[in-house]
Length: 312
Image: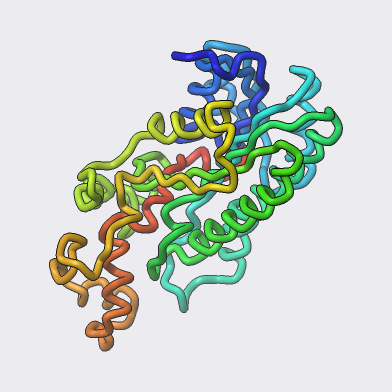
């Protein structure tokens, strides 16, 4: 393992499990001091205690300004500066059909998954300005940031929005020497989705759905963490404003071609779940269902139950 992050201080949100915990371990292995942030304080403490390098755990809700300011302050008080941010916290939200979704549920998911990254990015730039030097930021996006399906609408909307935050921050940060990128996980079994094992598109069938992506398997949190570490390191010094898909090729699948599964599955089952059985012949809906079959929104699975409010 290289020590390319030696002397750097990193914050990882949603770090009590799944991708966040894997990221914290990888950054620590590469020499960074790590601030392990999660709503699950006990989980964050456990992760911090198991890291090979300096680490501190902070309980925080990333959708709350005061909590984001607090984890930033603790990082600086503990280590003197703050260089790297992996803004990973997120929640899945309800699997309800579109007509049954409540505005409160939508607002809750957007609060964590979109407001959270905004607050984290803003806090990072404020700190960079105060310390007179920049660093690097990575947001956890999702295959759901790039594709669509009829379930998990609040999640998809928030993850699309997170890319807007990333790109705007990249435009602002570039001239300041601050790099901002995103990683878009595909099907990565973690507690976040296995907790929804009874839901279609939840955890129990994730491994089966993984057999439909080009690499014919699901990914692991460590595989996502390795890309995060690269993006935060100087090895990615000219990588800026990018979304790096880590999904076994799921995002490249064309569902209208035979090699992408076109015509190989029953659209009626998908359309009936969406309450649209009478329109099963509608090709646009079949395309949607095909995306889900290839691991669409589950790509969001990149995060864990702890990452949910992972916030910190």
